[in-house]
Length: 245
Length: 245
Image (cartoon, rainbow over all chains, first blue to last red; front, side):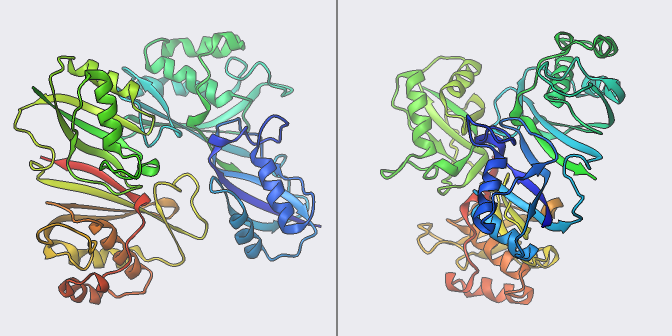
């Protein structure tokens, strides 16, 4: 069996997330079905991790085992011609049989887009969270510093997280305030808990809006209780940007 | 009667262009219908110019006359709550009764987005033209210089143009090659003929792909014949960015 590694871009708008489910179409299911068309095999595609319903990916990584001998470049072009327009395989290559997209991931980078302004965005309506009213990017930047490093992130992740512990290490957070009210929040960590980026972003935005204070961040983190963190930002502003191995 | 000036953002994907037509829904029609809901009047909305089916706008400008006394900010919020998610009024204010969105326009800025690479883009699939294979942005930049200034643009505009003459002045063309194969072509002119930006972009891309030469540009312009210009780039990469008064 060959082990094939894919880098994926997808628009999560129309899907019930990465993970195969009974109640709606997932990215994983679409990929498995199209690979089955090419190889005639019932393959299992394993991603670096789940993305929630409505969340996008610029660089999700996944692998699958196949007996197919189709050359990589032909496999890439073939699968892209079968996939719908909102999913694409950016790269595909054979890797060592031991490579595992989930277990081998060293860190992940997520991007969250916010649009601040008085009028809802049109062209970014499915790719950014619209936050109307005053919003101070400088305050967001100051608050973000508190999330850097190793913490128990229970105040920000879903209470339905099934991870054995909630301790993760954020190695980078960048806030970039661009033109037309677009604010990009990018963070890298050794791993992310369910809804963790969205919980942190929701909290940061509450600081930017003056509803919470920079000086509260440390206490909120220390509480390790989801009821103390800010709101969960909506999924459509979130992108899995990169998985690092 | 008051004269109201609007700045509009829209996603042209679902519309048959700006101009009201019998065979499909236009941006103009949607705006007129929603304004009618607010004012009870059968208003006529006059844009700075048409945009083709599938073309987007970041800053289309339009005006209309109304007897309504609804304050500007309430009108803005009201109309945006009535409009579909792919159209928004970014700004609205009362202007001098003599202001005319089309006749008073001094220049317009259009943006065209191209994605070059080996795999079709997903997140920009409705906002950029995918050009696979080798493409040299430097050649595009060199060729673009020839379009600067005052020329007869008959080699690039639609043969169905109903303009009395095809002489226009391009005051600026910028080519920006960014990450992930995204190339932005921006141009400003005192006016644009039907399909003119798309004809110029199609020609520039043929130069970038090595199918035409930079040294051919002058002759193509001088021919003043559509059969000599390059292909018409597809509408979905095009944005009316700004109208200058």
